[in-house]
Each structure stands twice: as structure tokens, then as C-alpha cells.
Image (cartoon, rainbow, N blue to C red; front, side, top):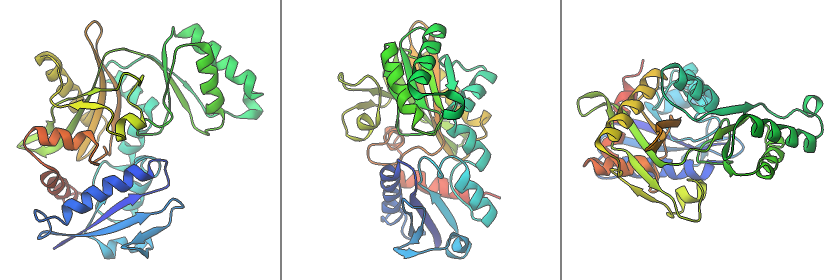
Length: 334
């Protein structure tokens, strides 16, 4: 019997999504397809960062004596940014997902875009604004106006603004006017986080998962999911993702050439960023300008509303097969 600790919760705003991802993994591990092979332990990190195992306090340094492998179901800060991966490495604990360095790069949207450009993948034009510092940047109203004017002078509207490090579309805004930008920079000034402003490219939204060593391929790409958001939404935000309002079509309505290119790009991103086990990359597909990579998810959500399970079902697979396969990869990790 292989003992799997499913780590979920965490200190980020994506706490609830992580609970749901971890709950899904626990449910499948305890289901009839996997419960003869695995014993699942629920490891919760609460919002204050305290660890618990099956409801009891846990010193994470004892993990190596409690589990054979960890399924990392965390999202956001501490879970996807390389910090918990570094801890697992120091403790000698095997875990699912990418390593510390690749996770840190993949979690930082500016660094990811830099890497995209280095290996020839189109990504929307963008500008990076560091954390607001009153002593350097001055009074917040003047700061917000100055930053908005700088964007307007260098990049025509419309724009998408997003925290440089966050997931689940938290903190993303679509801006059409300078007043919109000023409001976002006001909000940014209190976030203690860098802000990315990029050109808004209209097209079809696509998301493509990659699994290592699956079905006889070194890097297997799942069929692209086409995301159709409600008309009242301007983009695929947190509510649209998790409330069931959006339509996710898999395989998406893309041409043969578009599907082939999306597959190629998703595999290239996974390999060039040094990711491990599985990932999901997001794109905008345009008829006139081609395909643009937006970002990569090193620990995609696995909730009932998530895109990766939907793509798995589209190829005749399921979550149990996926979980068993990824745990096998993790157990082989040196």
C-alpha cells in the first residue's frame, strides 16, 4: 500500500479552489479504482500556514515518516511559486508537479513571457510595473495617473491588467480607458505585488494540457479546450471559471492546423520551462494574427469545474487513470 499525502488549502486567495482540487484527488484515491493501491491522507494547510494531517496538528518535518509521496494540490502563493517544492526537496519528500525553480518561473507571468519570447512563441505586448513604494513613487493619486499615462503613450487601448504572480484569474481587469487604468493602479498600490499590463487581443481562448509519459508519448498533449465566456463577461474571470457560467468545449472548435500548433506550443512550453509531470498552457487564437501564449499553469486545477478533467474525459481517460499515472512519475523522482 502506497501512502499518499494530499496537501491542500494554503495561505493564498485560492484556498477554496485548492480545497476542491485536493478533495477531488482524495475522492478518487479512496474510490474503488485506486483504494486497493493507495492509502490517502488529508493534509491541510490552514490560512495561517499551520499544517494538519487528518485533522491533527502536523510538523511538516515529519512528512518523510508519514507518507511515501505527496500530491501537491495547492494553488497560488506557497503552492505554485516554488516555496513548498523547495521544502519538499529539503525534506527528501517525493511530490507531484514541477520542481522549485521551474515552478517559480512559471508562476511569475513576466518571467514566463520572457521565456516565451526566447524560444520563439508569440505573447501579447506587455509592460511590467513593480511593487508600489510610497517613498520612491510618491503620492498614490499622482502615481496612478503617471503610470496610466505611461501605458497610454506606449500601448494603444484596450489592455488587460493582472498581478504578476497569481492564479485563478484573481485580480485581472480589462481596461478600455485611461480612467480604467487609473483605478487599477490605485488598487495595485495596495496589493504589494507587481502588475503586468498587456495588450488585449481578441480571439478564441484555448487551454491545452500536457502529461509526461502518457499513452506511450514523452509529452502527450490533451485536446484543446475552447472557453466560451458569458456575454456579460469581458474575460474568463474567477466567477466565470468556478460558477459554471462558461461553456468549455473539448475538443474546441479549432481548425486542424490550429489544433496541431496549439499542441506543439503546449509541449514546447512544458519542455522549455523544465516543467514536470503535467501542466496546462493558455492561449488566444486569432484568425489574422495567429496564436498567442498567455501563461502556463504548473499545477492546473482538478475540481469538477476544471479544464484538465474535461480534456481527460474527451480522450476516453479519467481522473483515476491520470492520478495513478502522475503518482507513478512522482515516485520515480530522484
